[in-house]
Length: 113
Length: 115
Image 1 (spheres, rainbow over the protein chains, first blue to last red):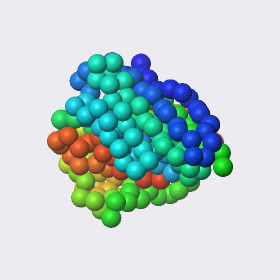
Image 2 (image 1 turned 180 degrees about the vertical axis):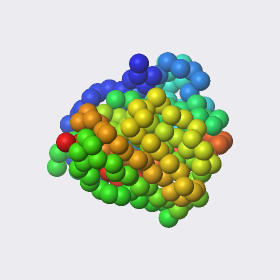
Image 3 (image 1 turned 120 degrees about the vertical axis):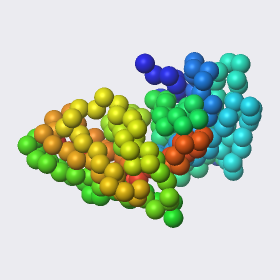
Image 4 (image 1 turned 90 degrees about the vertical axis):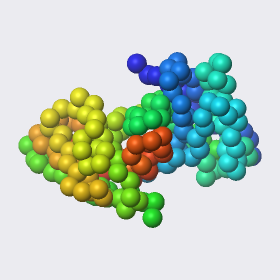
């Protein structure tokens, strides 16, 4: 049973466009919500993370929006570039010595030049 | 240094072979992980070591045997694997304890093929 649901499975965006990936969770014990980016042939890399007490966090062209009441969070990639083409995984973690990451199923983003 | 290294990059083994995967980090992290990743799927947690002690075993078959010789090294010993064990095996590390375990640093993985 997947604890974090992620959509869409894949998306194609033109260079300069906005990519949006959505995730939803049920377990209110989750306290950290990281996003990982994975390029083909590489391991995942932490991109950005947010906690439920923050509604938005921005790092460069990447923004996480968080809606605690709806138990949803999303990643926006602004001004998408071909180098952003990768698979993105949302995840959730309970903090406090919790070593487990509950990953979403992943979204493959393709940015066309 | 924020790098996790893994060797070998690729491994082909028969079902009767014994082989080992190796992982190393020098970030001072005291939690280390093994994950298995199938194509187009998220990583699946296999084992977690915290302060060199096995903390989590996600009901992994005994043909996979982890070992943590010291705080920088993590091994995964493989024996009598099945073709369905073919996958990308990822090592990761993080701070142990507290709330930073969500910040995991992954290696590039070992692509394992079982014939």
